[in-house]
Length: 388
Image 1: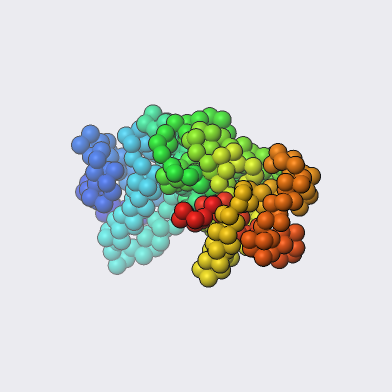
Image 2: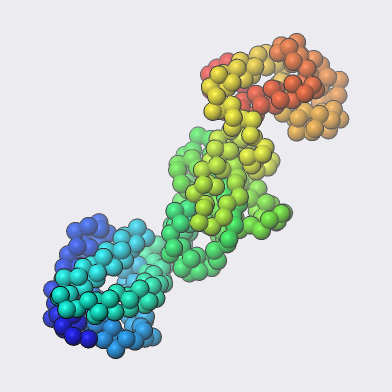
């Protein structure tokens, strides 16, 4: 190697200072730690640049001590409270600044040396970033409680962050190729979010946490047709409902790694139209509420279903009666048993539905219209006084 590396070597300290200044200027987390971490950040930038020049010159890969140094630097930033977003931003900025250093140092006769340096970065830069990230997540253990780190994992998986695998490994939650993405919608959410997250992490050991004040998300590893995973989803839904002391609805969608954002969007839609229950009886998927999802997208249809539900408010208890009737596949004995009423009382209520709405509950039309109206009502879709 000729003038390129010599020029880079002369500029190491200036380039390192400039890199740290850029991090502090552009990344709020680094601005926050700068008063106590400035010198260490400059030291890391100087050592890493000098070492890169040596290895490029010798055309050698990163050695164990180089990876250990990167891990140590990452661990220090994690322990200082740098957020995952800040850590990603710093790595991206570092890569951009190293390329700028090389570009500025390259002269007209340095084309071959420049291409060699860039090739070395492509071949070995990933190992350095992975080591830094491993150390970063190890350092977070000293700064963040486990439930906060698990919630970071959820966010990283949903946005397809490549560093999610390292965080998952540090938490003992290996990344799965497929998940049952579960959105639990909490009615009238209130405090105790952190306490709920602590309990859920300790009990279930899967990526989970709050995404919004009234929305709890869990990612349950899944292999097709796995009843154990489906049972875990229901257990999580029931545990969240018990922990918050509020009724919940449970919406699900199966998603693949690298496409989980699509699955969570669908599970969120399902949760918003699924019945809200004090003790969730089942998790709902798109196939369970496809009619309700379509109704939400067509205001005229939803308004018509609302009118049907308002007529059912003439009671007595017609919404819950129809809900039990359809859940029992229209078996009169099972439905009346679940309602703790006599079969004749059930028959009376079903006749009352027919009289109020003009639709026979046991007919094909009745199943389509009334079951959809009942589910929309139980999901809390319409909150005016005339609606059940």
